[in-house]
Length: 331
Image (cartoon, rainbow, N blue to C red):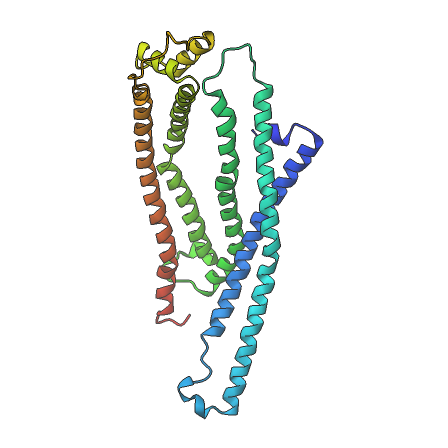
């Protein structure tokens, strides 16, 4: 999958593949930088907002000094808001352009895979089961997976790298008694890295069955679509063949019979109107339900863990900070 897009094809595809990868990584780095810049901005902004310079209950008795303080605060807040606009202004252009280039890039990757599959297809050999799904749906899922899986991991890694200096600075200013001396100023960095590593590892362990279930699900979905297409193209022949063949007969057998005998749908071979095609779908629908049931159960386990992990990481900083805020030792 990597070679067909990045190491083959025309010069234009070669340049676009590596250039798109550069845009992909650069956009993730920009988002990580933007998070760090906004983090520092919000710290100064809320520090400024919480300062009480005038008792508004006695605003009628304000002195000239109070008025000067209010004027200075208005100017300070306005400067901070202008600074916020300057920070986020590049994202108004960067995000849409990067997403447009990224969408074209991952779609081009998908098309290169489709071209490769078609170019290597031997029409004289035995057909591969569900080959149409492999070429169409799997490449489409691969395209969406580039941004859903790889981009999340890349964004997380780059965000962690950008925030490491901030974590080191905070760890230098505060060093609780329970922190081992060998961690030094990197104790907050150690906690952040360990949280990420254990989070990904446990998530991979809990969700290890999802990939196999998704593949089985695609196989059953393909069988259902094959039967529906046959029912749509030659409904009476499909119903008749479904009744005459064993209940567990594969759809490919029905398809082969229709192809070999294209004139089979004649007046003499039409299925009686009371033959209902539903029984031909009972097995595949049952397989589909059983597979989805297992898939939903695994997703329920995975989502439970993800929810627990998210909520734990939300409250964890407060568990770390609160004892320090109310410590008897000012340091």
